[in-house]
Length: 575
Ligand SMILES: C[S@@+](CC[C@H](N)C(=O)[O-])C[C@H]1O[C@@H](n2cnc3c(N)ncnc32)[C@H](O)[C@@H]1O
Image (cartoon, rainbow, N blue to C red; front, side, top):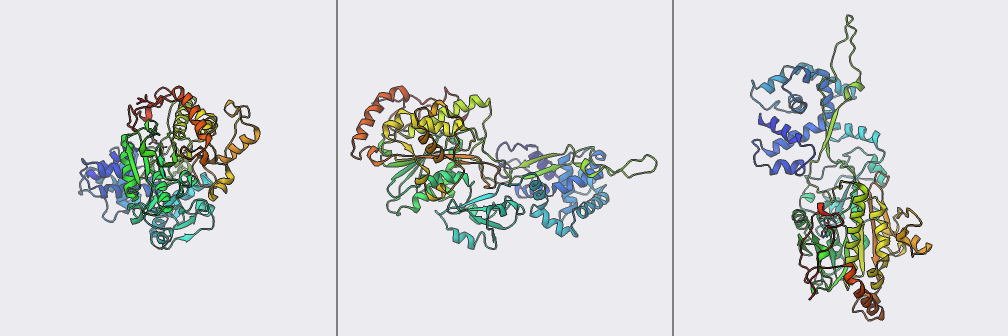
């Protein structure tokens, strides 16, 4: 019987504290029940919860059986009505008796619920539940544009052709993304993305977590927008090594590693240095990199602060490209559609009160049974969110974050051989996006080292074709001062945005790329580079106080410490 109590205890943590449902169950060594049995009960009961909630409320089960909580009632009713071997408890157990007493009424209400929904047989209803059709119609009416399940095919291990012939064999090809957004939530359909190579869109509840390809990292669940930075960086054979300055959990790192590997022969395959300041997140990064078979390309710097990386270090002498995806407000993040919703019955709601001529009580109307209903989402699988929305006073947070983001970006501009940088956030706020870009372009280091925006017409094809571009919130913004109208427009149009809840099916996102020409790259001839170095020396002490040479991390700060003060770089000890 511990099965039901333990399942109810797991579900009591609806905030998903401590990880996804799966990891919380499988990592809990104190459980008496088998993790597989517990996980199966919860995920099955949640799929059926929309129907069972209705059944339980109409039977007034909670009003009559005071020992049952809404969660216990749902789990027990599920097993009573739908599990092959019924309620898993001995015959006289108090919980089993509590539902068995109502078996006939629960069965009758279950039949009525099926008929009301228009399913001729239990098998037909079961199929609809499995395919998320009941939830689907509910959600579809709420939102026109459902968020697809984006799947990146990991070219370090496989190809899109191989995946079409195996993992997605039998899937129907959609002709546009809207077909995916409107399909039933677990329909076996795919759409090949026209902007990002090796990316597929699937309906949101297609369950790939049990597929062999997902388990071994051949496919990676990654939002379309999150694939933009590595693709826009467009690393080529002449770009040498790369850095991912803010790497965990590692989706962009492994994408970058795949692109670096694709474009270089094995013999001269460059490295990707992956910085992650947070030690716990660095552990996840290591796992993700290994699972994606990117460990021969990626060199992880666990617990290391990118701001403390010494650009002059010999180790980075070949770094030509830098990807920066720093912590941000997370305001573009889309709620997880793949999470399973648990609809709990509400005590005192429903009530199969039979109408009598005496008291003229009427059966409560359908809509009343849903009033006050409690619904929560549980995240079933182990996909790690890239960012967690940060809390606090928005304007203060934005000022602190954008100061930190600018420091990260201008630090990257100091790497002597770097000629490409992408800067991205999953934020929708101007201050963290175009605001940082304008400030970076106006910085002394950018001017001294010849950094400029990568204009739209020089971007890689898929990004050039993407129509949602940057915004300029106010014309007289101080950060845009010094740029003439045409240049401002060029920068705005070079910035790429994604909006959540649109027909494009992306999260809210921002990315821009910076480049500089060979004559500015140190060691590549040119008088410009000489002038740049002189100018830069002037500002060095004023703007960046550095750290120890050799890229050692000192005083790495944690995400929670990102107040403007805490975000200052540690001191550099000069030789
Ligand atoms: C938005 S997340 C990165 C998501 C990641 N790019 C991906 O696609 O999976 C930002 C990460 O940067 C890390 N971070 C923030 N500041 C850093 C710094 N100064 N040096 C290294 N890592 C940093 C945070 O701990 C966090 O894990």
